[in-house]
Length: 435
Image 1 (spheres, rainbow, N blue to C red):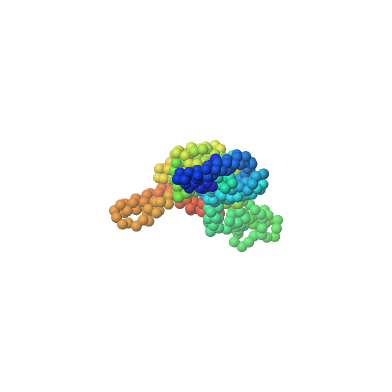
Image 2: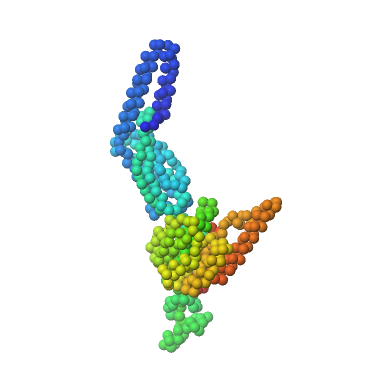
């Protein structure tokens, strides 16, 4: 039980009568009757709250999980089977870390009726979010007392990477390179990698495109028509090491990598390829390449709750493990946060794995380096910081240029540019027929 505003007002009303009873003895009888009435009223309020009818409650959330950093409406539906109209203070015990708007919610529950309250919830960490229960303060008549009612309402919901903004930028990057439909449908007059059909010879077709056996049976030349090869495989390799714990505002580097991985997977699936994934430098997760509608949910189930660890990435061991699990020639997309020393470790590993697979490397660069390099020079200390930033960025650029000689493509970008850069390189690889 808790004291309500009505009880505080009732207690305050007894004070003047008590002071008057001290100065004037006949007023003492009035004060006693007033105090007795107050006690009886409070006891009646207590009995009412102790005999409170059962409250039923349910929590409504959108299906399919929550998106990291996105506001979601959470609905609480309360119901009572009997009793009178009551004033409630409702607080939903939500998982942390998160932001919440609209709690506690104050509402009137109708007699033998129900009500809905809505508050907004914004998760700030991926993984499994656990709601525990709902705390309700029920007020008595005149708000004399308030009873705390705890209702167990456990709920587990997955917080997944918020890939929608990155998906828009990734699709824009794909369309700027070539229309997305062209990745898997556009017919090219020339030689691709996968035979599609025979057609009449057209001016500009190469002689190697001519099907001489089919032409011998017809009065004119016949050419083969090709399209970009489908049914190829893309494997996303996700680094969960300590450098992936770096943050750009609310978004961690691992969050950005997972969002970009989902975007690239979406584009590859639309292009007719199968997509798989493997994590390293932390929990080992492996998903064999899949196609179709089940591929993207399976990818989210495999990678959605990964968190950065304090381990150093061992690229050579990761590649060796992948080559034992997956033997078919594929495009391996390594997503990490590479430094100079990482390039020296990754280079020899790439030389080994590139004999069987194509490798694309996506490296994240902290935006603070760019900000520091663009700071105005006002004194010796600022000049030293700007020079150090430029020196480091130049060393990083040279290291990634060396890395580019061992792999098919290498991008070194900030978090917001990772998804578009990877999608653009993927489209270029498909168009060039390298895979």
